[in-house]
Length: 132
Image 1 (cartoon, one colour):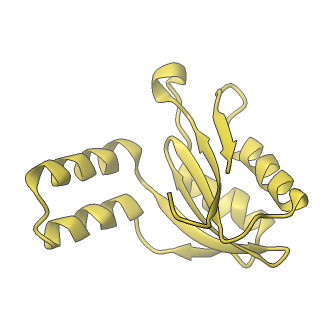
Image 2 (cartoon, rainbow, N blue to C red):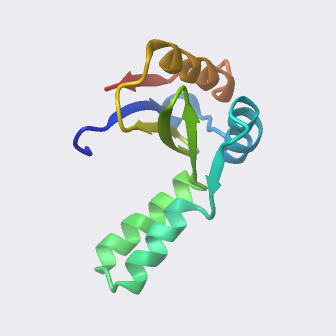
């Protein structure tokens, strides 16, 4: 975990619900509607991480792990946004949503993010939410 960062993380367990998120919809439709100034970071972040490791001649075991994660959890869509002066970096994968904040967010920012998560995650899917 990054020091002095705060995270709001949602995990969906595919084994439990046989369901997944749609990262493109989450970022392009739901988050962009709430945050028009949202900046999307180009590319599938899991594939980029795999390609970077391959170019750096990472070990075969690391490459297999990264390739499997990209295949099973991707695409991973990253973005940046600002809410009430709080800079937030985010990532949406098939089974996880992450919001990373450089400082503790005001309660209304966290409440808004939680409401948006409720829009991203289909109603019939159980999920775990942590804020730390």
